[in-house]
Length: 457
Image (cartoon, rainbow, N blue to C red; front, side, top):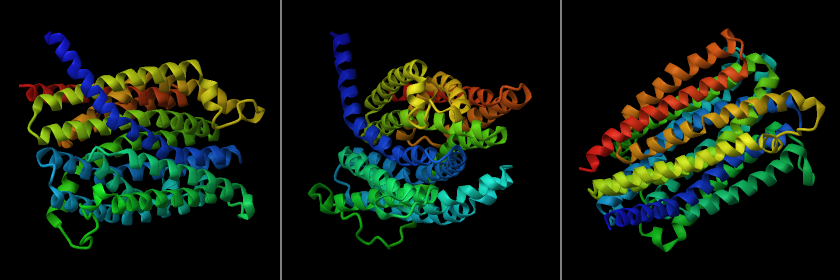
């Protein structure tokens, strides 16, 4: 009977995690589809345009994920607050309001950096011609950062309330808008000018505005959310809550920056090898990023479930929520790895014509890199699950250090050595990525096991 009871409890938690997680998974997929759609469209123009756009997209995503890490701390604060007091309306409103302030504060320096992306690329050793091409995409895309971060704050509110369905629907609408707008602005259909990569950037910035305005409409009109009056006294300063968000969120942002920057640095090293290597890297990175969205959704669900249980003072429930998310993520990522190993050409064909002779070198290298990507799926999923579980406990500083060790202490030096000293090229870079992700997975699992053992007492 105790075993049956334990099984029932685990299954009940798994159902609760999936009920919260699947809309978040689909939301994340819809979000990553924005940049993926841009690369698919631009890839039909030519591999040089694809390489420049991919380079710009890598820098934007690195900056965006750092910024998103900061404002996503609002979800952790709200989850713990609601676990402690489900009727804490004023406290929730304070967090949302300062989350929106944080979005503005982080966007201002980010815009300055992104506007000068060509100079950044040249400083990093990229070809001036390729760097110059990147601005066409970036100078349109960058203006979507602020509305996207505002959307993340409102999405965090709905996730903490365990009502994520609206975020999925709005994200799907934005993805459709981006696909239609990109088709018109990149290729010049329906009477629009053919702007190429510049049109892709403008279309995606517009889609991010759709994301934010959509959730503003939802929380303003839905009677379940209206009582929170989230935008009341929006301009009133609240330095204490603002400091709490940044104290909790800055380590998250830095941890995400360590992860995304290693992929960005890998893209830069691929650029040093050549346009073919960079294009192949961009394709495989987008495939991996797309499949990774499900793991992120489960991680976000874990943060909410662990945070609410922790806020309620129920350590056993928090521990169960974390390990359940861990098991679900492992099962998913193993499935993804099998698909990558058995159907590489099908996946690559989404981004580039695999039968065209001009693309043959890109397809061959991308197929090899996809094998490397399959190898680190398990480690990648485990590390993001553990980070979400630990964030539910508001443990963000130590995980930040662990990610720095894994990515930049192990993964990057190893990848660079394998690529340039041992002559493995792009394959060496991706083997380094696999090693870094696996190291972070082991370190964060150790951290969660240690903390969760205390919760179970």
